[in-house]
Image (cartoon, rainbow over all chains, first blue to last red; front, side):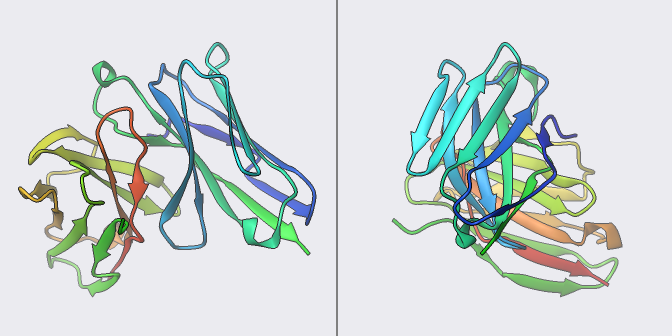
Length: 114
Length: 112
């Protein structure tokens, strides 16, 4: 079962604009990770944010985490055509909660129009 | 450092056959996890191995099994293949719990 809900399911913007994707989850977590996937290929790790962190940056990426609302957002600034991909959030629950290693959302399909 | 590698990249099998997929983790990573990705169910966790021991297991039937060797390389096996097993199978490695998971390119399995 998927813990995460991602919003929107699809997003289409013009090159140079910013893209924001949101992720909500249901249980407590150790960390939350964001991934990018180009069609049918493997997942590329973008950023990991721990449960005691509120914000993290990596290049043009900014991730926030609000554990009280069980939500996270990924902001991509100054988007490029190469950013076109599906983006997934994945949560790692504390081990006492059971069997899942990473629980994924259903993803946001981002299209950058030139 | 070389990334996670998976072999084969593509595989076509028929119903009832079995299949073995292989994964080599990033050097130094002792945790290897497997995931199944389908259009309908998305990304689902299969199992995790750490130091040759299965540490976690997802909600999949017993036809799905795996193992890990002393060099951290891992294999997963699917027996008595069904049409619904057609999927992209992804392997990921990490240093352990609370660490970033890095994924391989996947094996695309088609069951006819």
